[in-house]
Length: 95
Image 1: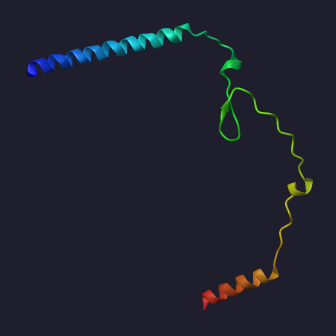
Image 2: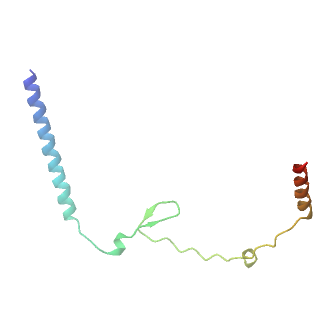
């Protein structure tokens, strides 16, 4: 019985191999039949703010008006108490 099982398995493998080869050839033929376009417009894809890919470019956003006061760095504040606290810390560490 083992001989019959071996030949049956061999036949199944051969059929599977033929079927895969035929499917591969069909896929290759389908790819060759598709029209080829080398246009740059066909190759460009856009990604929107949510991460979705689309063929159409996004709408331009209106320019934001910047506040000129925010561009300037605010002056640094010096606290007289801060200097005293640092001196107190240094003296506490020494004693």
